[in-house]
Length: 175
Image (cartoon, rainbow, N blue to C red):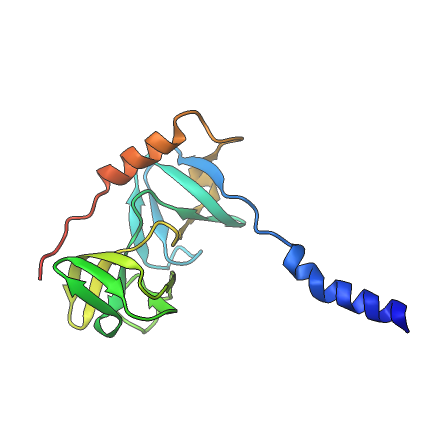
């Protein structure tokens, strides 16, 4: 009776041993690409990426890759979930949807969720919605064929990422 119990305990513990793969380093290939909210060409675009833009591949679902973009994405949050001090905002509760469009209706599928207290920058507004520059941890989907996947972190990656993020700095919308 002990053997089956030990086996069952090991099965329960197994998922905690499975780790997410480390992000892979990549660049956008030779043509601009639209990063989308979901892995579907009909999904709303959230950012246009120029050739050579550095990205981190967070997940792969052939033939798509979810990537993190330097400087983050411009996404939408409902006014009920953000407080402002000028154009700098703070998310007021956890698990708030970050949306590609100012709506809860399709095709505004959530790109991810904000955490409570997360900092955002206001870049636009429409009705009861604010467009914000979201944290870099939220990713968008691009066709895998539009990327050049690198075998390792290239020399100067941190500086290249920072430079690309600076170039994409949001135009702040003042209240």
